[in-house]
Image (spheres, rainbow, N blue to C red):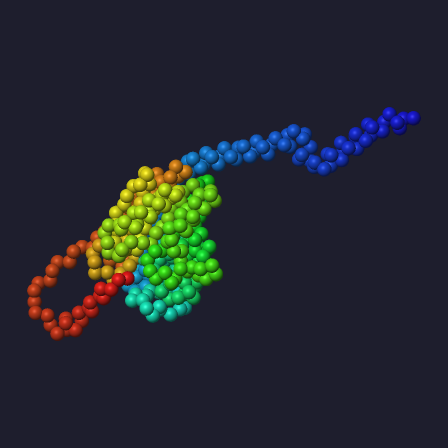
Length: 365
Ligand SMILES: [Zn+2]
């Protein structure tokens, strides 16, 4: 008799107990709070992210061509630190980027049809480690000793915690941006080479560099934007060697890249600096020139620029160029070399003639 009126009550009690067991101790308060708390937390996270994002400022440092064979290679083997003069600038930057103008390897053979071929010893990795976050390999020398040496270079850089970009083990890796994420800000840096030989371009399943083909470059910039990049910077290897002004080709492509979403364009390869432009309020630094390189008679090729660039979600906030002067070993110095006073005229002895240095070949590098 008692059972009939109590059955629904008992069922309700069991249902409540069952629900409490399922919910667990932390969720027993109420269904309402269980739903609302994550929503509130999520709203706070978004608000914090937006706040950080609006304020996030990332300091980038770009340097030009780094060739660590020949004079610089010998100086490093003798215990010198090529980057010592600019240690403060490297320390002050959040992200340090350069163009590695040589393979770093023990493998491979020099390409037979090239006048200048470079290959640095793996011992140089220690001087790059801790100084650079990423190095572009999109240039006309990273393939100097063939694909095996190129792959060895990628592996050595990866092991040292330096991200190689503008080249890779296949086409898609070569075209992938170097991504930086700091304080909620997403930066994509892309790199391309357009100075021959093109034979060293990456393919669907073979290693090499990213080639500067307009349609592909623009597609990569747009893809980086679609992937959430707040800032996109192409780092180009282009222009005519020893030309102090940019070519029409450089100007046209730089503008096209900005029209398609680039926030700044940075370049190198001509071995000299080439000035800068503003297009739609966005900077184009056509050529940073050399940074670590020897073997140039031309005085302008012994001067390069470091580029300090501050970016935020609004784009490039400010930028500054710092001159670097390469010494006799091709290492960058803060101060220009002191001019040597001409020696008093005298009749050279036979010993002087015998020890006179051989002239440097004038062929292009
Ligand atoms: Zn080059």
